[in-house]
Length: 167
Length: 85
Length: 109
Image (spheres, rainbow over the protein chains, first blue to last red):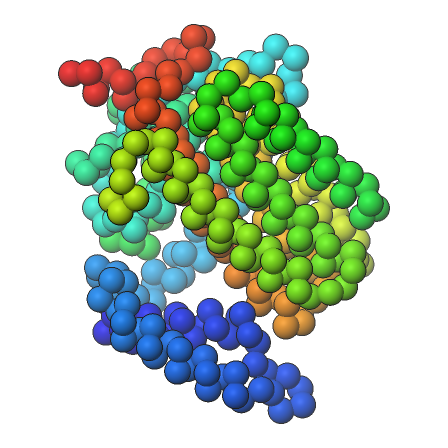
């Protein structure tokens, strides 16, 4: 199961790298080498790949992932304009600090995606992730020290969607 | 147009080099090197546009990989732990 | 028209890169610098790669550009997280104007 999924992912990456299709017939030697290398990679590294392979088969997860992209892009854009304002302002309007938030996500890949999304969104950067579901966040403009309040402000909007993708 | 964008990226690289030379701690220098690596990926993409040669993209891909692995190794080194944890 | 969109994306991306690098020089301590520069430079480089994709069109290099874009988007925040964690563990403290440091308080307990 894991090995099959890793095989397909490796073939996709190979096709993107080598692009063996062309209008005049294509390059079938390249495709054969790619399939062979993907098979070897899948047989050797299949056990290390993922913990929960059955999640790759739920198709509504891909739908929510596609829905997640514009949300993340909008948050990125706001984050960049926010950083530009803070950096170009002559008096540097920052109140930095490290706060603590709690997440409901259980799976490791979900927490990784949440931490990366937090790093890309306005004014926040994840510093430490603990095993029992707490994230320590460096916030450039601290508005509150309370766990509930910070969770509502930072984590909530991504957690709703990431729960549907990764849980 | 493309020359102007190259000039902006050169200014970015010099700001990163300023932080590498002036950074008070080793961690600051590591941050600036990480950022310089990502700016160099942007340079490679722009070279593709300027010269219409495809192979600069291969350089960008390899540079992004090596930059990530190098930054992780330096972070582990700063933390003071072994490399296989 | 396609040329115009491509150059607009590249110009916006390079301006974001410039803001990130100005933040790298101006902001007072490591965590703020890491925060500002990682956000802006990741987004700027992704926009420059997107603009390149729009300009060169659907050629064999397009797949590599998409791969490079996904790779930068995944690895840059991960590297920033690893660096922030490592420097906090190695004892680099926050700027003196900081409001709170709950991670340090929790670790001292």
